[in-house]
Length: 272
Figure (spheres, helix red, strand yellow):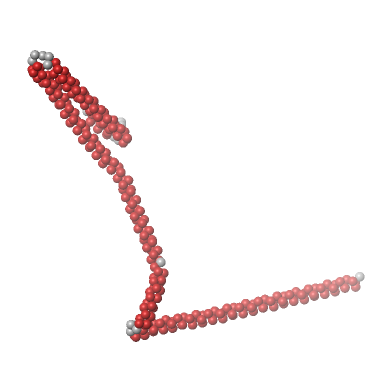
């Protein structure tokens, strides 16, 4: 005969097909079988406890009846002692069975705790891929955020020259203001003022050179535009003259054709 534990273990291992390979049962079937098994064990414990409680109540009742009957006998104390001994014998047996039942219940509770711990470990192992996926997703999100940060940083760096130019212009204004203040207060040394003046003169000279160059280029371009306009006007005049010549030639040709036509008509009239 196979014990309950062996039968449960065998059922958890799954059915063995004809080929000899183990086929693992479905997780829902395993949980259903375990639930049914635990329910059956708990029902058995409850039934046995009910029997022990009923025996205890019955033993107490029998002892009370025996006590009551003893008072009708001659040897009351002796009768009471026998009744008490009989009650204690039954009570000891009940106590023995109660201890055994309690021990089985403690063992079953420990077994179920172990099973719950094993199930928890199994669930944690089953959830491990999802946790890993979540961690990978978090890492990917972090990498995406880092890449976005790098893109933003690159964009800021691309805009840096303009910002630097603006800052430089502001700094130049601040420096010029500080320089003017120093000049007004007389705190700056003359050599520094001369250096500043020289730098300013050089800038002015460079600016004047650039301005003169721009003016020369402007005059040259204006002259080129004037020449182009003159050439265009000349082309327009040539075109108008050519058109006039063509029109005159066409007019002469028309007049000549008309004269020839008149002469032909006169000749025809004279011939008639």
